[in-house]
Amino acid sequence: MRNERATSRGRRSVRGRGRAVAVAIGLLLAGLAVSIGFGIAFTVPLVVFGASIDSPVTFLALTAVGQIALLAVGGAYVRRYGGVSVRWPNRRDARYIGGGLVVALVAAVGLGVVLASLGLAPEGSVFDDPITADPRLALGLAALSLVLVAPAEELLFRGAIQGRLRRSFGPVAGVGLASLLFGSVHLLNYTGSVVGAVGGVAVVTVGGAVFGTIYERTGNLVVPVVVHGCYNTALLVVAFLAA
Image 1 (spheres, rainbow, N blue to C red):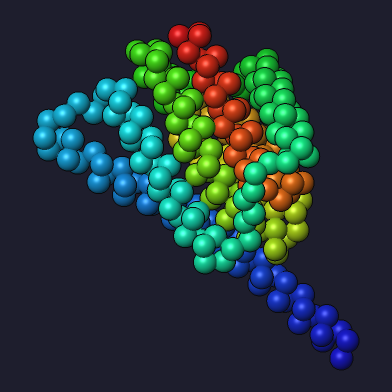
Image 2 (image 1 turned 120 degrees about the vertical axis):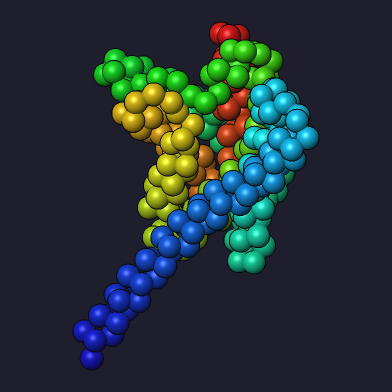
């Protein structure tokens, strides 16, 4: 009887974990699908009325539209299922913000150097040409990252996806799996060889693991949002200065 009960619990656990992975992937695909839909709805009128779709303003607006889609999907999920805590950071949270930002930046630079030495670094990104054409775009993206990109991505990937995975896999595996999904969604951001793109995804995945870890440690979604926003801003300011 005990063996039968243990087997039954094991089967439920396997089914529960499979369901958690399916929900996580479903949330990711839903975010991408809604983002594409919003992008088409935004772009078609511009084309119909002959407006420029290559301007920096349009690039920023299209980026914002895609992030609003992620915010909508993540917000809809957590509104229904809850489990996300948002509060003003206390002193402990502030320490994690400072430490998390340093760790994320050092990890990005260090991993970038290693990948470059191995010939595995990304060859470019979809942001390179627009920023080269108008370096001010980098500052616009930095501002957008603080007010929209970081909140939207953290709500979806940490609040919704990591939260769902945590309930079935525990915090460590939840962070790992959510970080892999977070990295994978950035694959199309990179241009050039597949190997280089995978290297870029690895850097993003490590960053996601840092964001996910400090979220688990603090239980406050504001903490990874601030770190993510400042992390992106630092990289974009460097891109602006280098352009």
